Length: 316
Image (cartoon, rainbow, N blue to C red; front, top):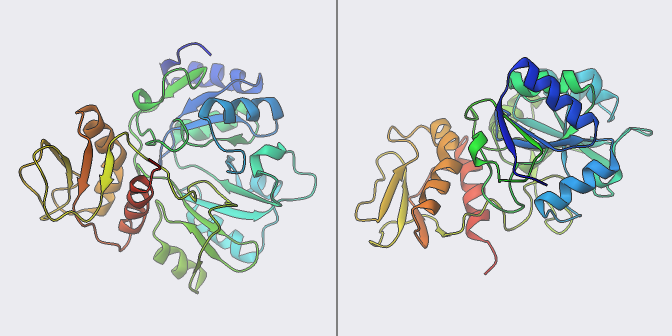
């Protein structure tokens, strides 16, 4: 694949991107969470090309993006709880893992051989316009090599990964969707852009937790993921002059080679939006280790800490 072409997401560019997707090509596009690498979810060859481009493990399933609830219901079995969450949080940063509907036109590799499928409606005008123009569900993992830092701007998309990159500006949420499985009970598979407490309030019950990293039902469940080149050290209370540091709120450490504050005012939403860009900036500064000050676990802090734990667990 030649170098990716970044284009502003005009109506004409979206129309051309839809044509490329229908022809089995890969197109990167913005969502409110991160930039996704899109492929026609019903095209076996396109999905195989997507896995190859990312270097993605074959057992790691993909999230399918649709434009409407009706399109989602054509692909999966919705019960009352699923419809409630869809109507409450879609379009938005919630992915639902549901039983795949018999006869659903989804490439087998999308679900990694499982009888469930992960679905969401993104809350971004470019993503929605592209879905409508393509007229097909789009599988769209983050537009980066597998296991590395997710892109939140068009220029972050790895060179050569896509045939086209639609530039829709920085991702507003900046962290991947929350994933909830409703294939028997209600389980939180991945914290993300919507706090688990908000989902629990909508459901009127607590979410169970726990997932099998060896056989994930959705992206983001592998033990090592979201990793920069530098090592990540969490809950730092001191820092050396050779490290980079991610500060948050009043917990600011001094004396690092490079320091970035995720949010000087201690806002977890701002911190989530800035996380991946900050990791990239520290990587580009050439630090060997990124020290991260303690970040609260409540609300979006749970998703931020989840990403940092997986980044710190990267293999040697």
